[in-house]
Image (cartoon, rainbow, N blue to C red):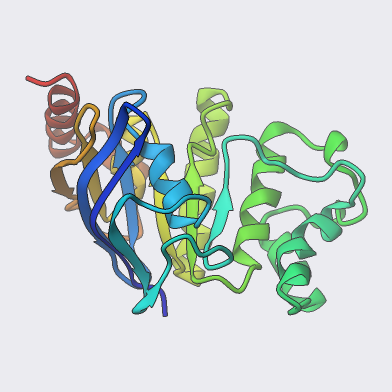
Length: 244
């Protein structure tokens, strides 16, 4: 299970009107990316979905359950890996399942192996590279019982080569487990390479300006990055974001 629905969501902070009548859904096992101008309210959407704040208007549901101002229903991965430095890698991976009272050592070890981190189970975060830390953070999200994962620009701090490696790795792992993902990025290529659908936000107060259905079959191949169709869609999204 894991269908997320937002219906007519609005949110303001005093005179700062951030979101206005935002509606969209994420189907079970779907990968949906949100792009928009800086400050358009992308992170605010995650805060509302995660129950940190309540929308002023509208309703958020997960499989029909009301999420308005309700926490603990999603798994969230921020830009920073947010690993606890005093916990080993295996202890960090187990954290979300521990909190939910569903600790599964076998599954955690399997995920660590799939992340290419076998042998690092007893290492600490400071002993890992940036890409390795992001892998740990993502498999920690996968190891949680929640059916929705929200990823907030998780690869933005990585160099271009490492970033593409992480994108390929993320797709490989996601296609095996198929949890529903809501992804935020400023990188148009990343959005096109990873997603089933792309939602383009307008300037504040943000609403869904346009939806792009990504036509490329899965599993994705690096070859699509240089295809004419990929370049055409990249230009289209670029001009949409610039308001042309």
